[in-house]
Amino acid sequence: MSGAEFVPLSLTPMLIGILVAVACALPGNFLLLRKQALIGDAISHVVLPGIVVAFLVTGAITTWPMLLGAAGAAIIAVAAIELVRRLGRIEPGAAMGVVFTAMFAGGVLLLEQSDTSSVHLDVEHALFGNLESLIWLDASGWSSLVDPVALAGLPVELPRMAITLVAIVAFVVVFWRPLKIATFDEGFAQTIGMRTRPLGLALVILSAVAAVAAFDAVGSIIVIAMFICPPAAARLMTNQLERQVAWSVVFATLSAVLGYVLAGYGPLWFGFASSVSAAGMIATTSGVLLALTAFFGPHRTRGGTAEAQI
Image 1 (spheres, rainbow, N blue to C red):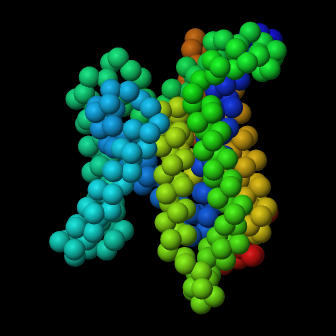
Image 2: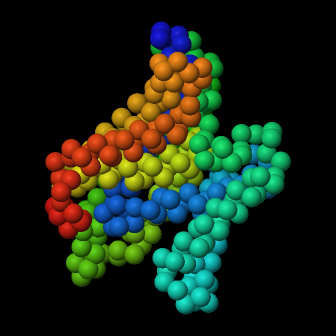
Image 3: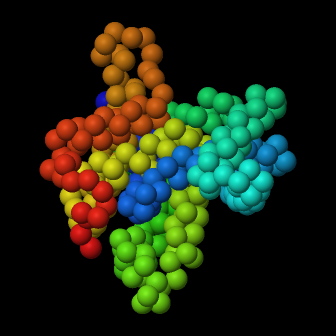
């Protein structure tokens, strides 16, 4: 494929996929070690109805209404979990499962019952996103990368995810030491004066921001996969946190690139007439990489997070 074809048709979707994968994988490392890996799944369940309501109110899919809708849904979810836990006298985990499932189902029902035909917002879009359509129409080749006029026509999802990733990287760099200590020994972190609860809440909020920013581009499936698969695969490669984070970035990037290529060209290699969902294939590729590390990773036999070294 020449630059005149690759740059406008494939470069921006691939870059957006990479940015989304890395933005989710970075906080996913700490969520995994804190045994909160499924919180990415929970976030994707909670934000869906909030995003749909935000669209129904504003009539547009834009960043700030989506973020506000997701934040409102998260507040409702927290209140509902506490209410279910107290009224039902059940464990918090069970209450979370009930609320998250109910909210996701409510979001799907809202999508099905609402008139979203004028925009790319439906159940399939919510699950698998719209990555293939994020092409760069104003580009004519590699020279467009330095053309201000062409750069003005970049899909808005690309700078949005770039800003989101920069914010996540900045958070991890600034709070690296407290994150590291609190993740491996929260009790010790508290004895030396660290406020572990606000730090944990900030990590969850950051994960929610990544999930919301990625939602309309890649949907919820890839977000769930990227929060879990690259960090889990990286954990099987090393028992040092710095190396685990680095490995997770490598696996996230590899999943995005290979998944996008296989989605577009893989079916054609086997004689099929059309491609498959890029987001779905990226998630599948991340799962395959996790399976490979489970069989061949050097630290696959070491159980539990206690083996990891600070």
